[in-house]
Image 1 (cartoon, rainbow, N blue to C red):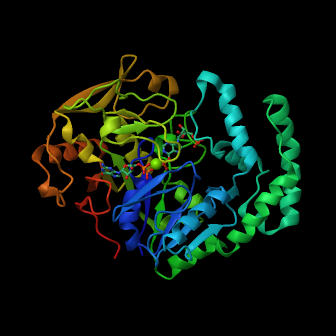
Image 2 (image 1 turned 90 degrees about the vertical axis):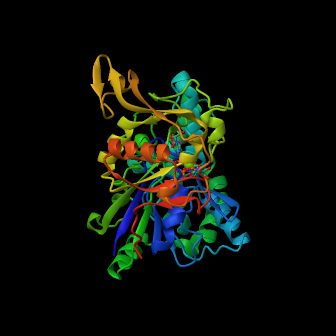
Image 3 (image 1 turned 45 degrees about the vertical axis):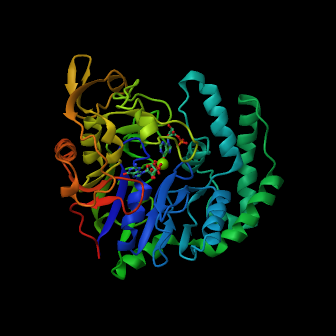
Length: 432
Ligand code: GDP
Ligand code: IMO
Ligand code: MG
């Protein structure tokens, strides 16, 4: 049966949570394969809004297995908080499975994240300060603690002593920050292990068994293509492979099992944190004087930070379609553009006299990019009630068609509001 990877195609917050929640019932399992609680995925259903950081957006459906895969980093306190939030709302978490191989975000990772950012000064990355970078750093350095270690107190302590022997001097001498006590961390973390014990599973085997039984999976990417450690705008990126390829390594499922890649693309672009953003607005407003930030309610789910906003960036769409091998696109937040008389689309960059229609590889070239804009007339009417593509005004349909042409992949969904129902299925064939 067919499995799908769902990925962010820009700088995050494209509406992955919403689309994932929408199509999750087609699948037997939803799998997070990278990232941690730096993610903030919003689900709105029946007027109730959930902001998810660690738990996959399939959790709303009792028959769907929700998996936190081996490629993720896990803050156990945050997972427990989310479990308790859902249980209190009558949403069962019995089908949540957490990989024993996922790495644990430790208190010193959060301290190191803050200290590194402070030291970078004006060159800071603008991280979410959730300890993501230092946790992945220790994973690569092979000194990380994993979820399975929570279930073996002696081994947990042994590994912790080893890593603190390195981290404490770093904090104290390099950053002049307080150090951590192994006793205190054990007292906090080992009870988390007991609480999470029923959820900790060999998820790689579970997922492959599901595939052997003919079941289908949806891989829920977090962050996005331009935040990918390899393919993003390094160094202003996160520390994992958010692109579609990460779904394979981050879950233990073979790539022959994946046949669709659905890219989530906002009808304009946003970014949180530092780094170049060619189409960033400085600032154009709509008819009633409100900005894209205000109309689109562009404030972070995780940190509450104001998101930087800009017009749709075509070279990024083209690049994302290629890097992820997109088969389909879900174009979100089209309704946010309804009050603009004229809408701009960036179709190319001029970088020191050279024209690019995709993202240039060299950091300096991208930083110098001057957007080449095309203008399209706006539709200037409310589209939040549209439920079929033909309900949309012609100008909105033309805008979608232009994006499809630039990206070179089919726009299968168009989202016209935050609610699950506010989505137009244009050409997506459900798995079942
Ligand atoms: P994610 O990180 O990709 O899951 O996206 P976020 O949840 O961080 O941000 C997307 C925001 O846009 C959330 O507040 C969603 O409720 C909202 N949203 C998603 N799709 C639409 C849409 O089509 N229209 C509007 N107006 N809001 C949307
Ligand atoms: P979702 O899944 C938007 C950004 C941070 C920062 C950079 C590195 O909701 O789309 P990190 O804490 O990961 O080391 O920060 O990445 N960032 C996100 N931006 N959406 C996200 O997640 C993000 N997760 C990280 O703002 O620029
Ligand atoms: Mg988000």
